[in-house]
Amino acid sequence: MLKNGRRVVVTGMGAVTPCGNTVEDSWKNIVAGNPGITNVTAFDASAYSSQVVGEVKDFDPVEFIDRKEAKRMDRYVHLAIVASIEAMKELDGKEFDRENFATVIGSGIGGIHTFEKQHRNLVEKGPGRISPFFIPMMIADMAAGLVSIRFGLTGPNFATVSACASGGNGIATSFNLIKAGYSEAALTGGAEATISPMALGGFSSMKALSTRNDDPLTSSRPFEKGRDGFVMAEGAGIVLLEELEHARARGATIFAELVGVGMSGDAYHMTSPAPGGKGAIRSMQMALDDAGISADKIDYINAHGTSTQYNDKAEAEAVAELFGKRDSLQISSTKSCTGHLLGAAAGIECIVCVKALQEQIMPPTANLVEIDPDCSAANHIPIEPVKKDLEYVLSNSFGFGGHNVSLLLRRYDS
Image (cartoon, rainbow, N blue to C red; front, side, top):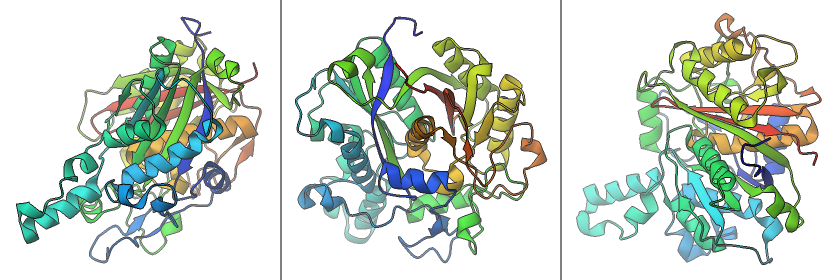
C-alpha cells in the first residue's frame, strides 16, 4: 500500500491528560463523554476572564523521575517523560536497537512555567538569581532531548514546533523517517504545560477562551451553537511507531497501522483558518493520497474541533467539501472532554483513534446539544459513543500560523 513498501505500525502508547494519567483511564473517560475540565487550581485566577482549564490531576513526577533531576525539568518535560515510560513499557528491561530509534516530540510553547519563574527572579532579585538551568529547562526541544536520554535512543532527535499542530507534525515526520529508512522506530507525539498566569492571561486577552466559569464541565463545546472559546489544557500523548517487519521480528503487540499523513499551510492569517478550510482539505487529501485510498473509505474523523467559532466552522466545511455528508462517515471532537492540549493535542488524539480502532467504537463530542448551523454539514456524534465497524480513521490538527496536519490510521489485521 505504501509507496516504498515499508509499513508503519503503532506498538506503544502513553498518555497523561485531564481525563486520566494513563491511556486506559483517559480513554475510559473520553469515550464515556466525561470531561476532565475544572476551574483553575494551580494559581489564583479570580482576576481572569477565563477560569476553566484542563489540569492534569494527582500527578507527582518524582514517582517516575529522580527528585533532583525533576527539579531541573519544566512540567511539560515531566509529562512527556511519564507518557513515554508508558509507551515504552513493552520494551522495559529488554535489549533493542537504540541507534535506529528516533525521538520526535513536539511542543507548541515549551517551558513557560520556567520562563515565568525565572523572570520573577530577574525582576525581584536581579540577574544573578536566574537559574543556570533556565535555558535548558525552557527550550521546546528538551522533552525530546531528555526522553532520548532516558531510554538511550540515539537516532534522529528533535522537536517540532507548529503551535497546536506540533504533536501532529512530530508523528507525521516520524512516519516519514521510518518509511524512508532513516529509523526503524520512533517515540513521538507532543507535550504541553501552559496552565500558568501568563499563558492563561495571553489567551484570555485574545478572547480565545471559554468564559463559562460557573459550569466548567460544559465549557468545551466543539461544534455547539453556544460555544464561546476553547479550554486550555495540559498533558502529553506519546506513541511508539515501528516499521512493521521490525515490530514483527521482536514479537511486538501491534495496535494499529499508520498508513498516511498530510501536511499543508494556509498562508492566510496569523490565527484564523483559511476560508472554507482550504488548507485542511489539502492536508486531508494528502493523507488519503499517501495511503492510496479514496475518501469514501474513511469511517471516522477525530476533529481538531477546538470549540472556537472560526475553527469549528472551517473544519466542518472542509470535511463536507472533501467527503460529502454521508451516514457512513461520522465526526467528533474529544477536546470536549480533554480541553485543548495545544502542542500535545495531536498525540492524545492519535491515541484516541488507535483505541477507537481497537475497540470499534467512536467517542462522542460531549456537550454537543444543539449543533451550530454553520457546522451542520458534517455528520456529528453528540453526547453518546457509537459502536461501529471501523477500518480507517483520520485525525486532524491545525495550529496558529496556518499549520495543518492529518494522520490516517487503519485497523491492523495482518
